[in-house]
Amino acid sequence: MTDSTSAPEASSKTGLDIHDILKILPHRYPFLLIDRVLDIKRKDRIVAIKNVTINEPFFAGHFPGLPIMPGVLIVEAIAQAGGALLLTEVEDRNDKVMVFTGIERAKFRRPVSPGDQLRLEVEVKGWRAVPGMIAAKMQGYAFVGERRVADAAVSCQLIDSARGRGSNDSSNSG
Image (cartoon, rainbow, N blue to C red):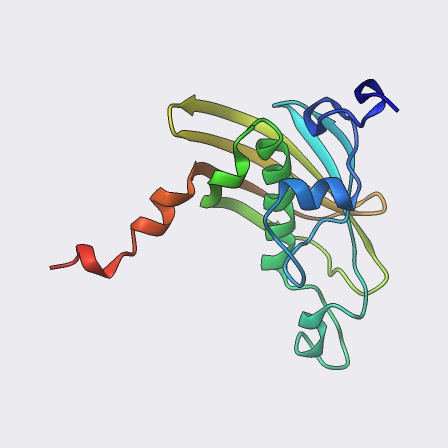
């Protein structure tokens, strides 16, 4: 077998399975909220899915007898899908951390329950890269079937992980 038969880089694929996602996103169970990427267009848009099951740890308390996925986790799933899109553009992503910088116009239209498949569609609205930092603003939509259940504009920055850790260093306070 030669190198030419190996899998292409994530940025050239149109879809990603869970193994590809785990190579891109730092999130792990129970906080990884996307299971598959159905379509990805570089610096433009991504379509991902989250299979919502009764086994999700948040259902134990939200709400007993009426399990509903928390809206904040739907927004996080939108952000993770956008993050997967952003991180496919970065070769040294293991040395980076993606941080939320804003959530705007979040709307929750219908509850998401166990057994639903959440389809996340995220479009890039703005993209800026300067040395040491990439910033993006994205519009995300969450659907169950053809019904929109939530939407939000999210913004984030990809920064050097050393920068993110150093900002809370107690030895710098005086």
